[in-house]
Image 1: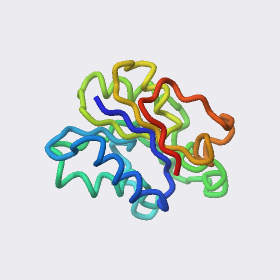
Image 2 (image 1 turned 90 degrees about the vertical axis):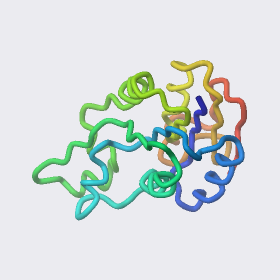
Image 3 (image 1 turned 60 degrees about the vertical axis):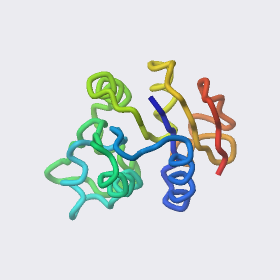
Image 4 (image 1 turned 180 degrees about the vertical axis):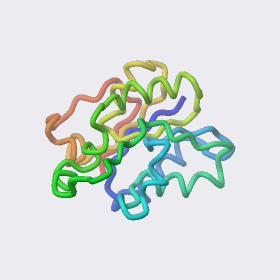
Length: 164
């Protein structure tokens, strides 16, 4: 299994996609993305399309299957938009078991390519030590969203680290 920990910023999309496609063949594969199974149905009027929606759009025509392997989003009937702006997507995961759910999805669906944010990739690599792990990073650490984890970050046994 190929595991990629990516930076979520759209400005790095093309470079990361190019490197992923250099490292492994995505054509006819089974790919799992860090997307909630109900993400796309909640975009209109609630959420903006994110980095992983763009990946899904790019790879659906090329892969045998694209699995949305994250935890389902919880959209409150009357969202607190100020709080959601502050917390981002974390606001929509009040029972955050995302890493656990993604690991179970990988075990159940057995994709040959997994693409998640680099904030989740170490957890997955520890659970699947034989994965061919490539991580993308900015400034020696996590993406800005995960800067509370510390920088520089010591990644868990990647085959390669690509600095953007």
